[in-house]
Every structure is written in structure tokens, then in C-alpha cells.
Length: 214
Image (cartoon, rainbow, N blue to C red; front, side):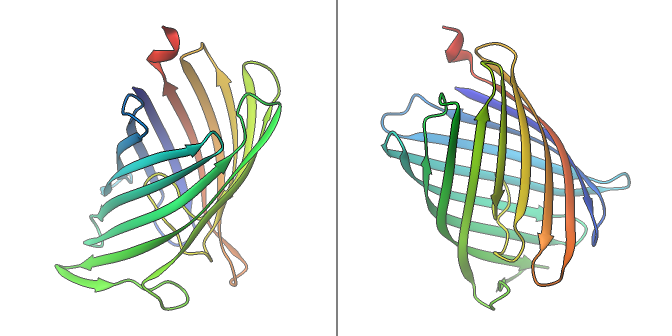
């Protein structure tokens, strides 16, 4: 098993600022498959903002390529709105033990929105019920304990964004032990075509991998 704890503060140009604690678990013991589940809650200084959860199955094909399927759901309390995503995508990556490496993902997703009990399609910027998702990143292993990751994507653990709402992220990782890794990250989300920033996030992440201590 692998456990992940995340805490992120978002500052938005259009909505209330939100604090987002999250927990996820990855099962590495299944044959030929990796399974992940996670939950996330959101809160402002004045009220509960959201509840989100996600499940994902990953099927490694080669050491550098895997196929992934994901289902996530989120309920936004103040707006009385829920979003559900079904996503299928491929993930390509180099060996993380290298000094310099990278990764990329490309896939497709379907989105549903429920507002006040009514199930209706939620359209992307191109007025479609579905769209593509993507990610691209590089990492730099400076020492055995320090590494940096620079990435851009249209999806994260609990959210999938339209292609005109990507985010860029800089992440700094520090390996406390072979089983404990601490990260801090800065994320900048933009609205393409409007020439403005949409959201800034600062976060801290802890990954615990007990099997690496054995």
C-alpha cells in the first residue's frame, strides 16, 4: 500500500478562496493492476465548500507505458451542484531513477453535471459533452533526496478541466527516508483566450510507502 496526504490552499480570481485537504490510497499488490482511491474536502473561512472522491485503475503495459481509467465525483455545497467525470487515458514516462526524465498523458473524458436534482450535460468551451485531457512534464533529480518537477496539465487527482483552463505546476520533492517523501508545490491556473489568471494554489504533500522500508 501507498498513502498520500495533501493540503492545498487556492486563491481564485472568480470564486472564494478554498482550503483543500485530501487523502488517497494506492494498492500496489493487485496482479498486473494498480488501484487508487481518494477523498477530498474543501472549506472556506465561512462554510463547507465541497466534497470530492475518485477511483482509478492503472494497467501497466510496458515499463514506460500504462493505460488508466478513472471515475470521480464532486459535490459543491454552496452552488448545490455536482460534477461526475469518466476518463480514459494513456500515460508515458521515463525511468524516475534517471537524472533527467519526463512524462506525458493523453486521453478523453465525459462530464455530467447535476444542478438541483436535474441531470444535464455540462458543455466544454467548444459546446461538447466530452473533450480531451492531457499532461506534460519534466523532472530533475538533483541529489538522492532532492528533485524538481515542472508540469502542465488539464487534470489532477479530483478535477478535470477544459482544455482552455490548463495549469502549470512547480513541485519540489524531498525524500525524508526511503518510504517518506515530502513535497511542496506552486500551481498557476489560467483561462486561455481571456488573458487572465484564474487560480493560484500553494500546497504540501506527503507520500508514505511502507513497502519500501521492508
